[in-house]
Amino acid sequence: MNVGERRLSDRAASTSVPRKGRSCLWRVAYAACFWLGCSSGVPPAAPPAPDAQASVALPPERPARAFAAGMHGAVTSAEARASAVGESVLKRGGNAVDAAIAVAFALGVTYPSAANVGGGGFMLVRFPDGRSSTIDYREVAPGASHRDMFLDAKGEVTEAGQVGPLAAGIPGVVAGLAMAHQRWGSLPWSELLAPAIALARDGVRLDEFQVRDLGHGAGLMHIYANDLRKLPSDDAEARALRAALTSTLATFEKAPGTSHAVGDVWRQPELAATLDAIAAGGARAFYTGPLAQRMADGVRAMGGIWTAKDLADYRAVEREPVRFMYHGHDIISMPPPSSGGIVLAQILTAADRLNMRQLDYDSPERIHLYLEALRRIFAERNRWVGDPDFISIPRAELLDPERTARRVADIDPERATPSLEIRGSGAVAEPRHTTHFSIVDARGMAVANTFTLNGDFGALVQIPGTGVTLNNEMDDFAAKPGAANMAGLVQGSPNAIEPGKRMASSMSPTIVVRDGQLRAVLGTPGGPTITTTVAQLLMQIVDHGKSLEDAVAAPRIHHQWLPDESFYEAGVPESTLAALRSKGHRMTVEPGIGHANCIERDPASGELRAVADVRRGGGGAVAY
Ligand code: DON
Image (cartoon, rainbow, N blue to C red; front, side, top):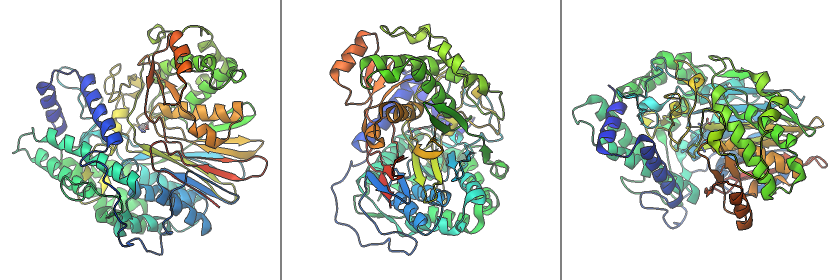
């Protein structure tokens, strides 16, 4: 029995709350920490510290902006400093892929809850000649993983897939970025890592968003540390895990139990050393040799199952994007193991067949049809979603518009269908931390990139001495077909755990083309709300003629079949909510759905308009 399992059975014994309830308690703790700030809360602004960031590799600091327009290039990400790094790469003559690599590594330093090199994700690229491709750098299950690894003796799902070392898949970020560089990059690799290394080594001057992010993470880690105190003190794995958590907390806190303040300069020397090794030795330095051995040993010491071979065997994969037409727009998005592209195609087909564009975007009549379509589309999502290298996915059938039309043909315009009357096998809901950025360069090359540790700060622990945060992506597998995961996702056996397999995803980096010209670069975090957020942006831009800025600002609404609830953001008028309730919808307010950092290109002038979505705080758009 491993550390995670013992810890979880301890928890089970010490509480009468059923598993799902305990998960919800975690979720409430996560959310409360995020919105209110954990530890000592968000401190008042302090005077800026001396400039420790002066470095040739780094652009000067500038205030974050939510909107920027320019004719030559644009970058928008969840963190302003990382966006500025992307802009400086473009201005040095790098292409959009070069800038994406630099932004991704920089975000790993400046936005640690979502973007560490210990995670994975997807990159979609469109080239100036109109071709496009994707890189799947999703994590894979370690070689010693097995289908029932998160089930206890009674067959109940434990929480070892959510926190601690067993929760971590073999990370893909470094391999994915290296593959992008090798195929399409133009500047030297080490130059692209230099800004991230400088930020990690010399420090990041913290703004309010980052202080809240770090405080939130530390709060979660203290909750986890309290849980770990219940483990036997003479157990070597438990001791190693506790020590790893203590050093992780030392990375994210100013002093034990004390949060950083606005204006503090925050340094990550261990991460800087890891990035240095990657800069000098490429992906090989991460996946083989002393660093890989250290990571595998570190994870196993604390009760995990990574091996050096797992790391050496990891491969990013180039995949053909999903492409479909929507009202004269060519939509390009992510294929399996992400459900994103296929679900997006189904939502937009439903919108077309139900003539949603004839109705006012904010009208309860249109929202009702939209929610009813989502309920049906998500009901079947989990029956097929999984790793295409392990299971057979009927991609052409799922993308057939006639099939989607049949699926939504029984929608009653007056009444919500109870979800349990709809055949399907899954429910989806996810925690909050993933991040998306968009980049366009002067030649029109465009990158949409979404990557993640899954939950906030992933598995809540770093590998000692490396600055590498463990993801908790193993929770995206179906630990037990038919049972809910961390936040309610019930998936089928196609997504069961198998060694070397990629877990299903909802991440949906998307590019839109009109008349052969780039029109928009879209994406967002938010688990299953990712795909519905991208669909809502597309419907607003394509069907309702809205600007991207207005589309990003509009309140979002989401349904995912189960739970049988519609989630909406503040801003939906009371009268609309009342009309939807009268049709039978259960409407539940949700703070901050998504964080959509997107770019549109004005078809008439060619101007690039970058929008940073500031509903979660943070965000920086640049253009020139
Ligand atoms: O791959 C997925 O779909 C999830 N791991 C994404 C999680 C997520 O977006 C959470 N953040 N907002």
